[in-house]
Image (cartoon, rainbow, N blue to C red; front, side, top):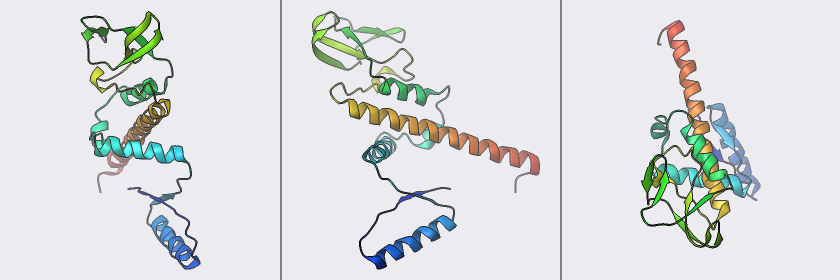
Length: 176
């Protein structure tokens, strides 16, 4: 199992030596020690942690999503173009049914003039519409959400590949 630890530079030389020794030990035991140096990487890691801890979207949960669902969800958040449909009585048609469970925004000059609009994802949104939670006034937040979903998709693919490799070893050589 690979775990990731963040390296931090500390001014005191003795502490740096201790950190270097700990990193060497961790790497010798198969741990990947990485340095998070950008605000973007830190923000995406924090969002992925939130998705796991608060929403329960762990690797175990995510492995049940098929047909690139996590990737499509990521793309919906990363896409800067949103579809706006003016709010009318009865709701909005999405994914084959009428719904009101879509976020809204008040636009001073929307496609049909000023007023309240539903914010719809692209038609390839893979989950129940209740899980579509755009941040219309915070594009950075949408990008962070999308990238964290992309990381979840990547983790899912890496875990599947690892399992396939293990299955191939087991079928060839028998389970040890």
